[in-house]
Length: 200
Image 1 (cartoon, rainbow, N blue to C red):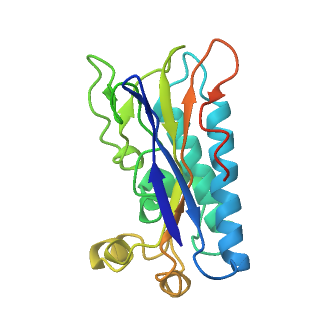
Image 2: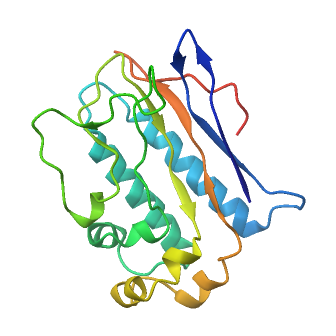
């Protein structure tokens, strides 16, 4: 599976977008299931991009939905909320849900002024921790990956030995992964997807 991460710049303002394709072959049912899972989580997360919503809550909800899907696909075992609380989801979703964009690809992301870093395992890969406001432009980019250096790490294997069907996960190591990313404008009404014309 191939990722294309791209963007455009107009009068110094930028966007960020990613699409995933299966190269040179027909997608398997499992690949389609993964794609549909990531796409449904992305669409749900975009709807939550409203003024006053805390970004880390949007991230946690997306992580829980991805984990629920991985449980349905028999890759993870347990309750999604508990697995996310332990940080087990980061085996397959190792990055934050998104970042602000504007005059730079990662424009003014980070923490809200005066807010300490949240050290909980569920949020260790969070890229921004702030409430959204009308006028913010953010990416929404859930993903699921099968990264050998993560899934073959002995420390992670020991820590999450009961959380993953490791035999099944090992069979996925050649898949790469799926990420779908769009750039979203937060408005006083519904979020506006600035990259909606780019086919998923």
